[in-house]
Amino acid sequence: MIKRKNSSSPSHVEHAITSEDLLGKDVIDPSGTFVGVADILYLDPKSLEFIGISVDKGFLRTGLVIGAEYIREVTAHAVLLNTRPVFRIKGMSVFDAHGKKLGTVKEVVLSQSKNEIEELLVATSKLSKKAESVPASIIDRIDENVFLKE
Amino acid sequence: MEAFVSQSPDPSKTTDFSSVLSSRVLSKNGTVLGKVSRLHFDPGNDRISGIVFRYGLKRREWYVCRPYIDRIGSDAVLLSIDPVLMHEGKKVISADGKTVGKLVQVVRKDSSNKIDELVLRRRLYKTFTISPSEVNHFGDSLILKQTYDQAKKFFKS
Image (cartoon, rainbow over all chains, first blue to last red; front, side, top):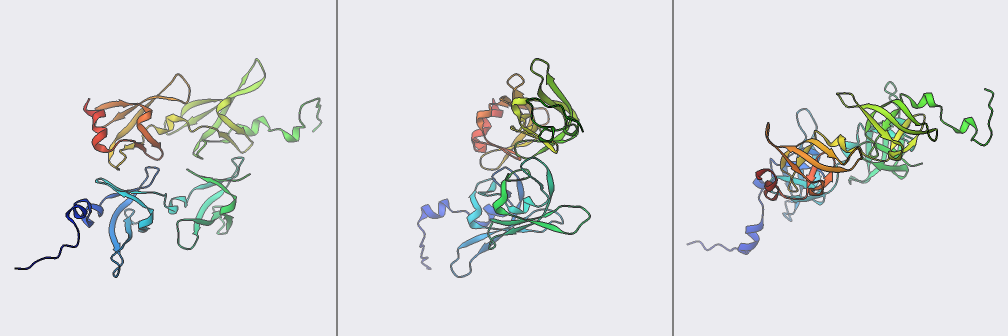
């Protein structure tokens, strides 16, 4: 007879979730935007710690990896994030404090691979390949589009 | 240009009326709502009482009064509100991320920007009404305060 060592108490297993509970679920950010579908789970091979997930954003769109620290909760229906992925900022219009359109966000430069913006590269003209740098310090708010400070 | 100015500001410090027409209208959260098609004046005090613009695919005319306008510039008119009718058509999801339905109508209190009730559609013709206090967040979707199991009370009644 093989005696199994069960290091987890029954109550811990009861409340645990498995990869089946997570993979294939919708990933939703705090504003209710559907980001994609969780398709890969990442674990640290030594510590067995949950690192994050890969998100399939859809047909012909590049995937996205989200760290565990940005996941608020895994519910029965979805994976809920605690922050909005910065890739959504790409393509947003940039307005000054008076509503004058300055350009379109071409690229988002993050700070040390975190989800914090260091600067935005803004295309001021559709024809020109040049992009202006907009440091995070002059950004007033980012919502549906980007507003700069006065 | 010759100017005749008494106590009013210098023309260079004012906004040309014609430049406001066709300028874009931005909601508080930065959504481009449309372009100014008309300016309304209050004949009682000779001040701008509001603007008119066309919104959405159906090109409905919206009038927004001066108290809801943050600033009027030659490039854009910035509103101090996010018009609540913008939420029509958005998905409604429960607090645990399941789609509950779609917001088909926002019923306002008179003509203000305050919501009286929200009409949701769950299946093709089945609609139900909830109070705006049931909504935790108005964003790209409406997120309810309740989980899906708790939200069932809305459409089972």
